[in-house]
Length: 213
Image 1: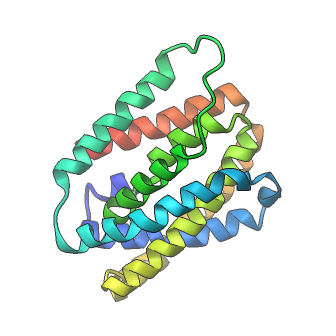
Image 2: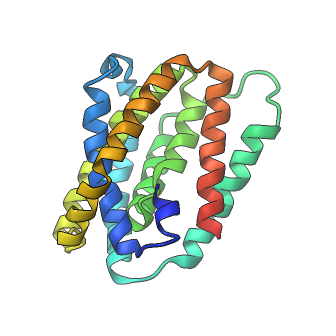
């Protein structure tokens, strides 16, 4: 949503609006489809510690400076990674990724989330390597985003980024956002593991391309 809206609207409107919707979406998803029972709590601790530090730094940059070059470099990185996921065949089982890598993913995701509202890719990349079961993947990333975006929203309120026009735009988008979230949850149940991984890669690729252009 964020990269597409940034084609037409100002970053300081789009990013706080996305944070508002993300908090509502996280609550909705955790209360439906038995999402909570699949959460990998052991993986969340490092991610949350990282995002707690990174988010204020990113929000400070958003409220004070521009970041077009960093946004494009980040978009290029995740586009290359997504292409690797789509077209490079895995040989054998990947080496187990350590939990402390989640701290780095959370820190980077927090910084990027605070700046651009697109902090998901580092966390998606980490969890894609860490968790094989798509139900656990989806549940864990849903709870992560709920915590991260709630913290992001508090910071945006403190820095003055959440204004009347942001709340008005959030209400305007809310019906379509809720319908999309529920539709995605129903479709998720029907998707097999291989197709799920391709969807993750395509989401990363589309996000990366939009950030670059």
